[in-house]
Image 1 (cartoon, rainbow, N blue to C red):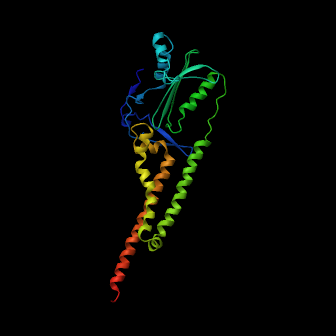
Image 2: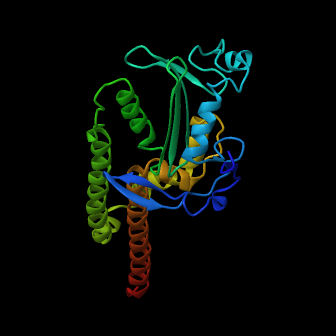
Image 3: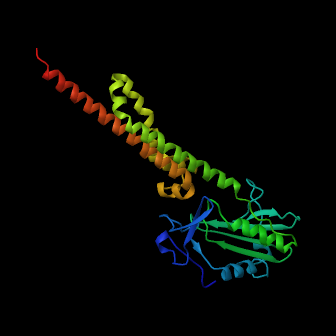
Amino acid sequence: MNSSTTVERERDLPPSARGHLLVLGKAVALPEPPGFGNGSGGVLSTAGDMARWLIAQNNGILTPSSVRQMRTPSQANKEYALGWTLGETPHGTSFVEHGGDLFTSTADQLLMPGSGYGVAVMANTGMTYADAGALMDGLVALIEGDTPKIPSAPQYLLIDGLFLLLTLATIGPAVRGAIRSRRWAARRTGWQRLRLLPYLAPLALCLSVAPIFRVLARGGDIMWIQVVYLYPTFMIWLVTAAVACTAVVATRLGRVLLHSRYWRAEVRGRPS
């Protein structure tokens, strides 16, 4: 496996390791976001090397006891062994599988120990709507004499479309609120101006989204830009909402200040 190596950060990736995100069903070429990968997800390989790796799992290079230990499920999870996920194909053929992913590319490997078949798949689309798993399912179907099923796209297209509509729906009211800020400032006094506070919620969520995902990932080191790669259309809507609502707050507070100055100047100018 002379073409296999490890890297620590995204800047160490070779030019060929450039992938895509799927947004509204379209593949968008983007660089891998900053992140540390060595030790977990930092292995780079080729299809040829992965084929050699799978052959080594099944041709006697490893001792039977070593193979048995690697494929013995843990007590905590009966479907997981030492790096391998255990399962069966639709025809009941036992297999061991292991996948890997970056934000802009994915990979999968599967071995059917009983039949001797092994498959390694590498795809240049990221983990959000990964293609490696779908390609693997199709190849396994061909091996077993079935017709591969074309993956359906409506689910993620529906989600992306929903957030696109939310983005467009956010812009209109924000523009209207900014335009009418003078009227709002004239009508709202004192504590009524505290009604602006909810408008800052999108900005607060936008700034705290990375810490929130770190908690959901049980302490995973997730950066803000990585959340954008994971949920692009959601983050487009969130950033749009944060900018739009903050602009409304800024224009209304600006009008409040101008209104206050005008009122004080008018009071001073009145004859006593």
